[in-house]
Picture 1 (cartoon, helix red, strand yellow):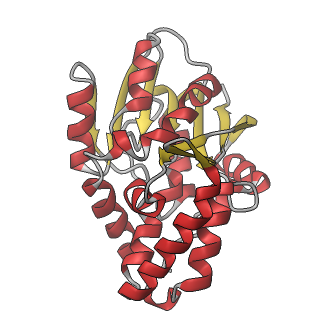
Picture 2 (spheres, one colour; picture 1 turned 120 degrees about the vertical axis):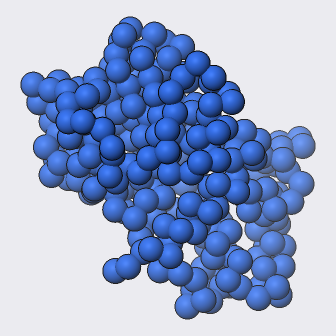
Amino acid sequence: MDYSDFRESEHRGWSDRANDYDDATARATTQSIPALLAAVKLHHGARLLDAGCGPGYAAGAAAALGAEASGIDFSARMIEAAKERFPKMSFEIGDVEHLAVADRSYDAVVSNIVLFHVTDPSAAIDEAYRVLKPGGRFAFSQWLGPDQSALYKGLLGIVASRVDMTNAEAAPDAFDLSDQARGTAVLEDAGFDEIRVTRVDNVLRAPAEDFYGFFMRFGVRIPNIMASQSKSVQELVRAEVNAHFEHYRCGDETHVPMPSVIYSGRRSP
């Protein structure tokens, strides 16, 4: 299936969110980074590529631990944000599905909540394998699906009951790699061994006021779906989402579980 419209929407959406990432998406995604770096057995002096780096958090954390870290992202505005945050590091525009990198260049490659957003996750995993040195390690994080995530169970349950999906663009299954057997199989197919799976219990801590409005800044997929709906449907979903997540209020914040899973593997020596 052709997902070119989805790819363009993702590119546009994340470019638009480059300046908001700190106060929205990063509230949850950064919680996966310590486990992600541990999974690649990061060591001092290791060459690490943050593939799909966004504003550069994973690369920045790796550099703080002594790695020679750099990042690529398909959004020029995200690269600008990464360079502003980490001015001494190297960040370039690039495509995780087609890395402009020589074979066997890195000791480690990481992708933090990235394959959730690409058109062909298998291609990105194959590319990570290609650019790793023998014995190098790759790790990626992925949101768990509605069967294990209070955030996605509540949000997608409401959206699915109210929206007309025929108005939305075709998109790959967001939670394909949330299934442990599937995620493991994709790494095996790429050639990785020593595959490990680790759960991270991320908690999204968001402003309690208008949780729906906050989430329209947090992600891209669901906002794109909602943008294809009528104003009346959007307002109905807003009201139901805000009422549902009021149950997760902690003072002036909403604390809702949205766990992730870390997959990792080694390129055999």
